[in-house]
Image (cartoon, rainbow, N blue to C red; front, top):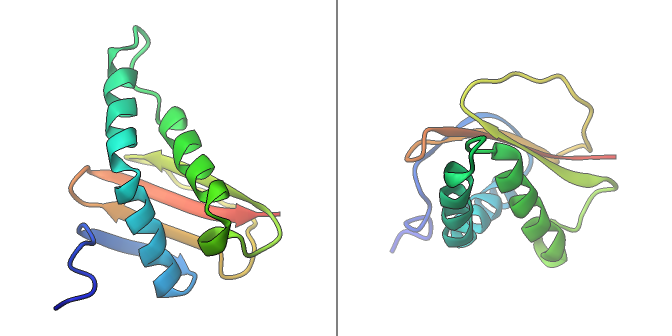
Length: 114
């Protein structure tokens, strides 16, 4: 049985972390998916529209609470979620990944910055 069968399709744009850590992040986003989906639906109902930052705040909070898997490094987790963006930033060594979640059409930039 494929141990990665539960992973949704994703395409790595840039990765500077262990692939096992990246897979944990993708799995965590999916485990958190029900709450994120509900949050996205609530956000879409807002008069001012969908706010990616609110979804990112939920994902980062989830990662902060899972110190066993995501507690390494010196800084704080940061998340950028969207469809079209670029960034220049400083991050903790081996604590950055930039990937597309193909089913949702969203791009995720997640990193720890000190």
